[in-house]
Amino acid sequence: MTSNFRRAAAVTGLAGAAVAFAGAGTASAMPTDFRCTAGQVDTTIVAGDPGAGQRYVAVVFTAKPGESCNLEGALPVAFAGADGVTVAPDPGAASALVTLSNGRQATMLLHWTGIEDPEWQVRPTSVTITAPGTTTPHGVTSDPRITLPWNQSPLDNAPEAYEVTVGPVVAA
Image 1: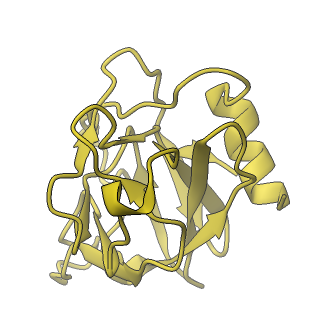
Image 2 (image 1 turned 180 degrees about the vertical axis):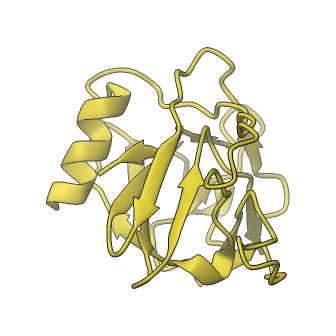
């Protein structure tokens, strides 16, 4: 298990609790409070340790050199090639504003089950995370979508188990 995943798990209470999706917060009017754009961060997926049918990955955001921006709450997530799988928010998950700059990292945890028979599972081709901002401090517009290939385990796609939950962004 990587240290990034451990940090995300510890902060979000992974030990026995379902991780959830929290709505994105609002930024203050301060001129330095800019939301991250897809172009300001490098994003990767780090697999967690599966157990008892539970699956986890940490989405790791790393600020590019010279960049400074903020993330808060959970970011919208969508899967390509996984019709029927939903992404569910948890309004009870606490979130805080996380500032990234010059290589600092933040993580967001995804959780799903992997207990169904293979005919009731689906393997997405990619995952898209939508960054909250589209304009940098310099007024440059950026595509807010971060699309990564999905190289993790399949997602359950049975009527009773087809949900992926997303935790809030936490500092790594």
